[in-house]
Length: 249
Image (cartoon, rainbow, N blue to C red; front, side, top):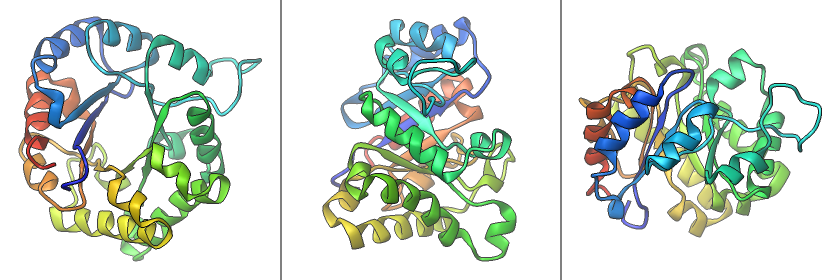
Protein backbone atom coordinates (compact mmCIF):
# COMPACT_ATOMS: atom_id res chain seq x y z
CA UNK A 1 0.00 0.00 0.00
CA UNK A 2 3.09 2.23 -0.13
CA UNK A 3 1.76 4.28 -3.07
CA UNK A 4 -1.76 4.67 -1.73
CA UNK A 5 -3.19 6.81 1.05
CA UNK A 6 -5.64 4.88 3.23
CA UNK A 7 -9.29 5.95 3.24
CA UNK A 8 -12.02 5.36 5.80
CA UNK A 9 -15.55 6.25 4.68
CA UNK A 10 -18.60 6.09 6.94
CA UNK A 11 -21.91 5.24 5.26
CA UNK A 12 -24.69 6.33 7.62
CA UNK A 13 -27.43 4.93 5.37
CA UNK A 14 -30.85 6.26 6.54
CA UNK A 15 -29.53 7.11 10.00
CA UNK A 16 -28.03 10.09 11.74
CA UNK A 17 -28.96 13.43 13.21
CA UNK A 18 -27.57 16.90 13.78
CA UNK A 19 -26.41 15.64 17.17
CA UNK A 20 -24.41 12.85 15.53
CA UNK A 21 -22.81 15.34 13.15
CA UNK A 22 -21.62 17.36 16.17
CA UNK A 23 -20.43 14.31 18.11
CA UNK A 24 -18.52 12.93 15.16
CA UNK A 25 -17.01 16.26 14.16
CA UNK A 26 -15.72 16.81 17.70
CA UNK A 27 -13.74 13.56 17.53
CA UNK A 28 -12.83 13.20 13.86
CA UNK A 29 -11.62 16.75 13.24
CA UNK A 30 -8.92 16.15 15.86
CA UNK A 31 -7.37 13.31 13.82
CA UNK A 32 -4.37 14.19 11.68
CA UNK A 33 -5.53 13.40 8.15
CA UNK A 34 -2.14 13.80 6.49
CA UNK A 35 -1.92 10.01 6.23
CA UNK A 36 -5.58 8.97 6.03
CA UNK A 37 -8.62 10.26 4.11
CA UNK A 38 -11.74 10.34 6.30
CA UNK A 39 -15.18 10.78 4.75
CA UNK A 40 -18.78 10.48 5.89
CA UNK A 41 -21.85 9.78 3.79
CA UNK A 42 -24.88 11.03 5.74
CA UNK A 43 -28.43 11.29 4.37
CA UNK A 44 -28.84 14.19 1.92
CA UNK A 45 -30.34 16.68 4.44
CA UNK A 46 -27.26 16.37 6.69
CA UNK A 47 -24.52 16.78 4.08
CA UNK A 48 -24.27 20.57 4.42
CA UNK A 49 -24.25 20.38 8.23
CA UNK A 50 -21.44 17.80 8.11
CA UNK A 51 -19.40 19.97 5.76
CA UNK A 52 -19.99 23.05 7.91
CA UNK A 53 -18.81 21.08 10.96
CA UNK A 54 -15.46 20.44 9.27
CA UNK A 55 -16.09 16.89 8.05
CA UNK A 56 -15.49 15.70 4.50
CA UNK A 57 -18.90 14.54 3.34
CA UNK A 58 -20.42 13.00 0.24
CA UNK A 59 -23.70 11.64 -1.06
CA UNK A 60 -24.95 8.07 -0.70
CA UNK A 61 -26.17 8.00 -4.30
CA UNK A 62 -26.69 10.35 -7.22
CA UNK A 63 -29.14 10.52 -10.10
CA UNK A 64 -27.99 9.36 -13.51
CA UNK A 65 -30.13 12.17 -14.99
CA UNK A 66 -29.66 15.91 -15.30
CA UNK A 67 -32.02 18.24 -13.45
CA UNK A 68 -35.62 17.72 -14.51
CA UNK A 69 -38.88 15.93 -13.74
CA UNK A 70 -37.44 13.19 -11.51
CA UNK A 71 -39.28 13.50 -8.20
CA UNK A 72 -37.21 12.40 -5.24
CA UNK A 73 -33.92 12.25 -7.14
CA UNK A 74 -30.90 14.49 -6.52
CA UNK A 75 -28.84 16.03 -9.31
CA UNK A 76 -25.03 15.68 -9.18
CA UNK A 77 -24.69 19.42 -9.80
CA UNK A 78 -26.58 20.17 -6.57
CA UNK A 79 -24.40 17.78 -4.58
CA UNK A 80 -21.25 19.38 -5.95
CA UNK A 81 -22.66 22.86 -5.28
CA UNK A 82 -22.95 21.97 -1.60
CA UNK A 83 -19.19 21.46 -1.53
CA UNK A 84 -19.20 17.66 -1.51
CA UNK A 85 -16.52 15.89 -3.54
CA UNK A 86 -17.62 12.25 -3.38
CA UNK A 87 -20.64 10.03 -3.94
CA UNK A 88 -21.27 6.34 -3.47
CA UNK A 89 -22.57 4.50 -6.54
CA UNK A 90 -23.90 0.97 -6.72
CA UNK A 91 -24.15 0.19 -3.02
CA UNK A 92 -25.61 -3.30 -2.62
CA UNK A 93 -28.78 -1.89 -1.03
CA UNK A 94 -29.31 0.35 -4.06
CA UNK A 95 -28.81 -2.64 -6.33
CA UNK A 96 -30.99 -5.06 -4.32
CA UNK A 97 -33.77 -2.83 -2.96
CA UNK A 98 -34.07 -0.27 -5.76
CA UNK A 99 -33.15 -2.51 -8.67
CA UNK A 100 -30.11 -0.61 -9.91
CA UNK A 101 -28.49 -2.63 -12.69
CA UNK A 102 -24.83 -2.58 -13.65
CA UNK A 103 -25.80 -0.29 -16.53
CA UNK A 104 -27.63 2.14 -14.22
CA UNK A 105 -24.67 2.19 -11.85
CA UNK A 106 -22.34 2.93 -14.77
CA UNK A 107 -24.58 5.85 -15.80
CA UNK A 108 -24.50 7.22 -12.24
CA UNK A 109 -20.71 6.81 -12.18
CA UNK A 110 -20.45 8.80 -15.42
CA UNK A 111 -22.78 11.53 -14.20
CA UNK A 112 -20.79 11.90 -10.99
CA UNK A 113 -17.54 12.35 -12.86
CA UNK A 114 -19.12 14.81 -15.30
CA UNK A 115 -19.86 17.00 -12.27
CA UNK A 116 -16.45 16.64 -10.60
CA UNK A 117 -17.64 14.17 -7.98
CA UNK A 118 -15.38 11.22 -7.25
CA UNK A 119 -17.48 8.04 -7.33
CA UNK A 120 -16.87 5.26 -4.84
CA UNK A 121 -17.99 2.22 -6.82
CA UNK A 122 -19.43 -0.51 -4.59
CA UNK A 123 -19.13 -4.10 -5.79
CA UNK A 124 -19.75 -7.47 -4.17
CA UNK A 125 -21.41 -10.86 -4.28
CA UNK A 126 -24.32 -12.42 -2.42
CA UNK A 127 -23.91 -15.40 -0.11
CA UNK A 128 -25.43 -17.68 -2.76
CA UNK A 129 -23.01 -16.37 -5.38
CA UNK A 130 -20.07 -16.98 -3.06
CA UNK A 131 -21.27 -20.53 -2.36
CA UNK A 132 -21.45 -21.10 -6.12
CA UNK A 133 -17.88 -19.77 -6.45
CA UNK A 134 -19.06 -16.84 -8.58
CA UNK A 135 -17.43 -14.09 -6.50
CA UNK A 136 -14.79 -13.09 -9.04
CA UNK A 137 -17.21 -13.29 -11.96
CA UNK A 138 -19.84 -11.11 -10.25
CA UNK A 139 -17.35 -8.53 -8.98
CA UNK A 140 -15.64 -8.20 -12.35
CA UNK A 141 -18.96 -7.85 -14.20
CA UNK A 142 -19.80 -4.92 -11.91
CA UNK A 143 -16.45 -3.25 -12.58
CA UNK A 144 -16.45 -4.09 -16.28
CA UNK A 145 -19.76 -2.25 -16.70
CA UNK A 146 -17.84 0.96 -15.97
CA UNK A 147 -14.95 0.01 -18.25
CA UNK A 148 -17.30 -0.91 -21.10
CA UNK A 149 -19.08 2.44 -20.88
CA UNK A 150 -16.23 4.82 -20.09
CA UNK A 151 -12.93 2.99 -20.59
CA UNK A 152 -10.56 1.75 -17.91
CA UNK A 153 -8.93 5.18 -17.47
CA UNK A 154 -12.17 6.50 -15.94
CA UNK A 155 -11.41 4.39 -12.89
CA UNK A 156 -8.34 6.53 -12.20
CA UNK A 157 -10.62 9.17 -10.73
CA UNK A 158 -12.57 6.79 -8.52
CA UNK A 159 -12.41 4.46 -5.53
CA UNK A 160 -13.63 0.86 -5.51
CA UNK A 161 -15.23 -0.63 -2.40
CA UNK A 162 -15.58 -4.40 -2.20
CA UNK A 163 -18.51 -5.23 0.05
CA UNK A 164 -19.60 -8.87 0.17
CA UNK A 165 -23.39 -8.60 0.44
CA UNK A 166 -23.51 -11.47 2.94
CA UNK A 167 -21.33 -9.49 5.36
CA UNK A 168 -23.21 -6.17 5.32
CA UNK A 169 -25.04 -5.49 8.56
CA UNK A 170 -25.04 -9.19 9.41
CA UNK A 171 -22.17 -9.21 11.86
CA UNK A 172 -20.42 -11.65 9.53
CA UNK A 173 -17.10 -10.44 8.21
CA UNK A 174 -14.91 -11.87 5.51
CA UNK A 175 -11.67 -13.04 7.06
CA UNK A 176 -8.70 -10.80 6.29
CA UNK A 177 -7.48 -13.53 3.94
CA UNK A 178 -10.85 -13.77 2.12
CA UNK A 179 -11.07 -10.00 1.74
CA UNK A 180 -7.47 -9.72 0.59
CA UNK A 181 -8.00 -12.42 -2.03
CA UNK A 182 -10.80 -10.44 -3.71
CA UNK A 183 -8.90 -7.14 -3.47
CA UNK A 184 -5.85 -8.80 -5.02
CA UNK A 185 -8.06 -10.20 -7.80
CA UNK A 186 -9.48 -6.74 -8.56
CA UNK A 187 -6.07 -5.10 -8.61
CA UNK A 188 -4.52 -7.84 -10.78
CA UNK A 189 -7.39 -7.68 -13.30
CA UNK A 190 -7.03 -3.90 -13.53
CA UNK A 191 -3.26 -4.30 -13.93
CA UNK A 192 -3.87 -6.31 -17.09
CA UNK A 193 -5.49 -3.19 -18.57
CA UNK A 194 -3.53 -0.37 -16.90
CA UNK A 195 -0.76 -1.26 -14.46
CA UNK A 196 -0.20 2.31 -13.25
CA UNK A 197 -3.88 2.77 -12.46
CA UNK A 198 -4.01 -0.58 -10.67
CA UNK A 199 -1.09 0.37 -8.44
CA UNK A 200 -2.64 3.70 -7.44
CA UNK A 201 -6.38 3.04 -7.09
CA UNK A 202 -7.74 2.88 -3.54
CA UNK A 203 -9.59 -0.38 -2.84
CA UNK A 204 -11.73 -0.38 0.30
CA UNK A 205 -13.30 -3.26 2.18
CA UNK A 206 -16.87 -2.93 3.45
CA UNK A 207 -18.71 -5.58 5.42
CA UNK A 208 -19.23 -5.33 9.18
CA UNK A 209 -15.90 -3.58 9.76
CA UNK A 210 -15.55 -2.54 13.40
CA UNK A 211 -12.93 -1.34 15.87
CA UNK A 212 -12.00 -4.94 16.70
CA UNK A 213 -11.25 -6.21 13.19
CA UNK A 214 -10.22 -3.09 11.27
CA UNK A 215 -6.51 -3.22 12.06
CA UNK A 216 -6.15 -6.77 10.74
CA UNK A 217 -8.19 -6.03 7.63
CA UNK A 218 -6.32 -2.81 6.85
CA UNK A 219 -2.96 -4.54 7.26
CA UNK A 220 -3.61 -6.60 4.11
CA UNK A 221 -1.46 -5.44 1.18
CA UNK A 222 -4.31 -4.69 -1.23
CA UNK A 223 -6.85 -3.30 1.26
CA UNK A 224 -6.55 0.48 1.46
CA UNK A 225 -9.15 1.18 4.13
CA UNK A 226 -12.83 0.62 4.67
CA UNK A 227 -16.41 1.56 3.89
CA UNK A 228 -17.93 1.48 7.35
CA UNK A 229 -21.62 1.03 8.16
CA UNK A 230 -22.96 0.74 11.72
CA UNK A 231 -19.66 1.53 13.42
CA UNK A 232 -19.57 4.94 11.69
CA UNK A 233 -22.59 5.97 13.78
CA UNK A 234 -20.53 5.76 16.98
CA UNK A 235 -17.99 8.56 17.21
CA UNK A 236 -15.39 6.76 19.30
CA UNK A 237 -15.65 3.49 17.34
CA UNK A 238 -15.30 5.32 14.04
CA UNK A 239 -12.30 7.27 15.34
CA UNK A 240 -10.62 4.03 16.41
CA UNK A 241 -11.17 2.56 12.95
CA UNK A 242 -9.78 5.72 11.31
CA UNK A 243 -6.70 5.60 13.51
CA UNK A 244 -6.17 1.91 12.71
CA UNK A 245 -5.84 2.83 9.03
CA UNK A 246 -3.04 5.30 9.76
CA UNK A 247 0.39 3.87 9.25
CA UNK A 248 -0.83 1.27 6.77
CA UNK A 249 -0.13 3.52 3.82
